[in-house]
Image (cartoon, rainbow, N blue to C red; front, side):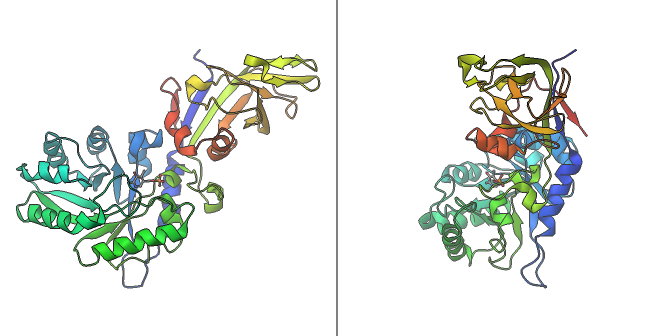
Amino acid sequence: MPRPILARISLSALSHNLEVVTRQLKPAAAHRPRPLVWAVIKANAYGHGILNAVRGFSRADGLAMLDIDEAVRCRQAGWTKPILLLEGFFEPDDIAILEQYRISIAVHHQSQLDMLSQARPRQPIDALIKLNTGMNRLGFPAAQYANAYRQAIGLQEQRILGSLGKMTHFARADDDAAVTREQIDLFDNMTRDLPGKVSVCNSAGTLTAGLWSTLEPVEQWIRPGICLYGATPFDDKPASDFGLLPAMTLSAALISVRRIEAGAGVGYGHAFVAPEAMTIGVAACGYADGYPRHAPTGTPVCVDGVMTRTLGRLSMDMLIVDLSPAPQAHVGSQVVLWGEGGPSIDAVARAAGTLGYELMCAVAPRVPVVVV
Ligand SMILES: *Cc1c(COP(=O)(O)O)cnc(C)c1O
């Protein structure tokens, strides 16, 4: 029998979360269409599996990712709606693949315009021209944006590019509305007179009422990622506040239960010392499974439906749990590390000083996955 550990991916949670996000996208005015949704599925759909995302997000208007191979897999799986590469392409040879599989691109750098100008695709490629409004990661600086967009229109006239749009990315949509407002104002000012659709919002922007809807009445595409998997982009607002459901549940079983005396040290470095006699258990999950190694004593975990905590330092393949609140627990009892029936992935991430984003992407290939 394989080690008793399992990641369960819920397709119904993926589609439920997409529904939650879509439902709150009311058009800014009655005569305007509602914004369209790129479901962001980069990094193997945040660890949930590209093909699961294709199924779970079948009602999304498009899929967005970084990896051209993942884009091709979506097409091969039967996805016919738009696909966007958020970093665009990296070398001239990519352009033939973009054309063959009808993949749209973000264009964020002059080097990409230069490569496109040398290309002779038979079908024009749809593109969003990215403006740096303050994230300072990708995108043309404001002073160069109009020129870059003019070049893109030139490529469109040569039928190298197809439809064009305007794009930016927020740096602080999760914690600073004033900074985000400055980014939106800069975006509006720079793009108002340029034709094409608009795409600005990640999850935090999408879930913050009003951020997306204040833009010009053009075709808008939002780009939610983390919330579609049932985790929160915010420090102070849990995913459950939005009605989001965890799409990934990581569970294991107890493989050992023992009684220890007061003063006994537990695990490597004896980082936890029992203040009194207590019962502890060992779950078949360690950092080599993707559980965060920095999770300290007290990280929430659920055993047989009872919330309890981890004890001491995590090992490569095991972690130790406090069975004081679950005295009935036995070898074989179910341990939910995060997800349905356990702590939220965000609560575990917070305890370990990281983010739900990192944990869901980091579940190791050796963990078996079931899709429900
Ligand atoms: C990852 C990403 C998103 C989605 O971000 P979330 O915080 O997961 O919603 C949107 N846009 C771009 C450009 C991204 O890289």
